[in-house]
Image 1 (cartoon, rainbow, N blue to C red):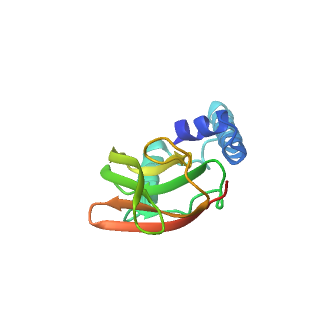
Image 2 (cartoon, rainbow, N blue to C red):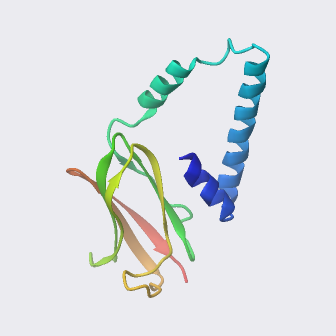
Length: 149
């Protein structure tokens, strides 16, 4: 997740830059306190890993894309509770498959995929309403998004 955040920040995502800056401040504070022996208000590493495991969702969940409406790109985020095979697809209003963004295994945790508003063949898609679908195992979630050219 940190690598994805760093990549988004390098690509100019203002929200990712803010989140990365906040993360770096927390790490620096932790390192300073640890260096001078004031770690009592921080959990031990074993507690951190178990709290991270409990922070995973019970089942996969799909978030609303951002920004929406969008031009020319949008970010689609979803959370996985375990390493799983995932399909992320884009459909038009008629239900026709326009693009497969991902079809394969991904690790547990938050996942972020960027869509450039292009069809499977690489051509720009027209302005309009589209649906994105996350299929994980037998669970399928769909959300609506709007592309404005």
